[in-house]
Length: 308
Ligand SMILES: [Zn+2]
Image (cartoon, rainbow, N blue to C red; front, side, top):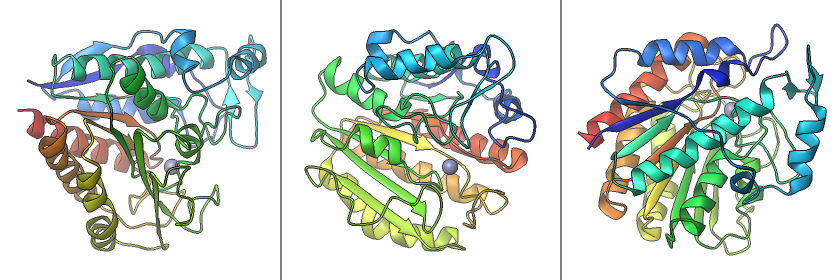
């Protein structure tokens, strides 16, 4: 068994205005960092409308397609932009996580990393938001549950920002455990401990600014790892944002590259115990290009080690 790296050049055609942190160069740096790794490289297919409709209404698709410019940029909110290639890139990103679920549940590979953009975890049912158009992680969870017939899927979101979109999309989904850690206070402002989902299946783990990797580990040992083991997922999905890194310009947590490796190793270990080692990871944030590249490489190396 091995690790799949799923990506597509179309994800480079989602172009944000100059100076925007969620830039094409992010994915270029990630792919360069992963270039030498012995992974199974897979081209992301386009998701079908029906796949995206598992988590978003038709009006959301219609709105994005209508807003997409033929040249230049169109602005959806203060942070979220479309270029002529953006909607296609979003369908590749969603297609990547679907392909990843198919490959991992089909035992073609042990685990998979989706190197995609736009990211997904801020997109709510009807609202593109925070650089995100489609909720890729939630979509992968719903697809694993409804299409593959799993009973329990866990999503772990360690991006420094709250996974408000994933929370919105999975709010009433009893079969999905969502655990999301985030710096608080920080945009988008949600992610308090008392946000627990319709069935108590959402766990928010706020972390104070300047938290180190050691403090993260203490919080994860107390609130995340035991909850995951208790839930015993059949598949673990990771919303892998690397903006909790100490060098990241958009937030104030102080994790190191090696903290991302260690955290990934532990999530893979729990997946080994409950989920036959099945892990699907998808790229979210991370805005210092060097820190993003190094942390993503450490993350994928940990996946490879678990899949060896
Ligand atoms: Zn983020």
